[in-house]
Image (cartoon, rainbow, N blue to C red; front, side, top):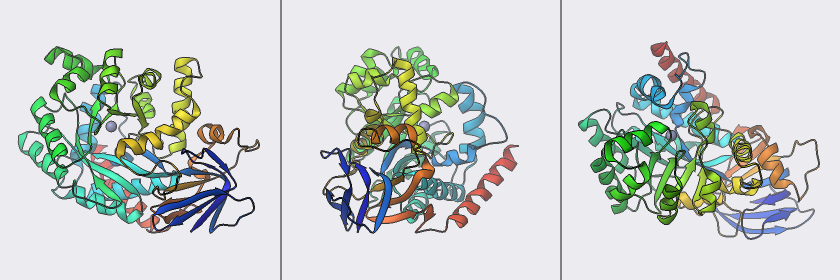
Length: 426
Ligand SMILES: [Zn+2]
């Protein structure tokens, strides 16, 4: 298959390629060259990007869109009074499957070719995560999925959740598994260590929430006399296979530890803004060469990567006065850095890389040029500009239409689930 466009923002050694011709063989990129006037099987008057990768989502966040009971303000009330009792604790295996399938499709439609899902459904019937993985794979999306293990629902469920998570670690192909625990105020040190040991034994990535709100910092200081990063470091769970999502409230010393241990951070600015937890110190993390990536956390227009890109750029321009976290940095968070965090041979348009691509029609009122293609993409594009999405060498979305699944059927099923949960919550 041959893909052509106006520019390719490769995020690889070739940088920006004008009049690109991208040859795909099986599921890999065979070559990327500039050939003005060449015709392709799929062409876009605009930019071709590497597939965009979210390193942290909660696909079940779909249920929260316009929920009839508004979430209370503040991180702890949000979790205790709303997110846990009204959403996560009532999910069944059927609910998980239906929400995951449709949320995966919404990610794809807007240009995410891959995401890392952190599902928490402590009372769902065993086997729910394998059902989720299968439903996602059917949409054509690439994903790394986990069941967020927690001890907040008692010992028996805590053990069941670890086993559910471990059952994902042999998955191969488009949808793989990773080990995930919630965080230090819902999981004991022993439990977190046990989960990390399973991950190490199986060569798996490990994910947890870190210092999303000030509550997390206050809790570890009070109970362990340490801030969260030194506490986790003493547990021995921070290394290059660990992804710390959120990471909002960090000191310089904590950032140095994350950098020294080669931990990747998943920054989720839109969710942080919605809950009011603060702005993560991204500029300082970049200064210390922490691998910063972007997640969508499943909230507020979360499934549109271009909203995430522009919000991230604007937030850190506001925070720093500008010029510190650039448009290319922000794009790398969703491409090369994310691929590094998830151990994927993706994230750039290069010979031999996985053929995951996003084609963006240019609708800007100003000319698209080699000098502004990245800026146009980060600040000017929107999910509806996506005309085609290619994952693993297959066209999974074309002209806004899903190619492998019946979008209406997935939507209707997810809406039934959401309607049921809303009825119970209202
Ligand atoms: Zn999260």
